Length: 86
Image (cartoon, rainbow, N blue to C red; front, side):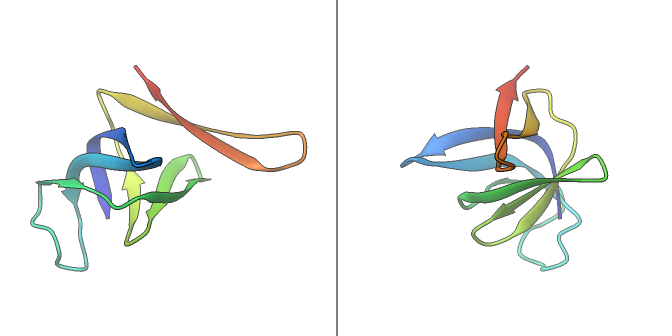
């Protein structure tokens, strides 16, 4: 599933995504629907594409006018991600 024009928001010490959803193979969302995701569990860079796993789904983040995702690794090899406002 793809999420375009996305941005994050903090809810009860968890982060969720808002955006426009496309290519939903589950049939839960109409093409181009505006959604709020469940809480983010993981963020991964796969061949230069940002993949976000939430409690309920997995999204490939597409273009956003609002934010970008940055993934780094600490010296001990632990992955860290953050969402930066443009």
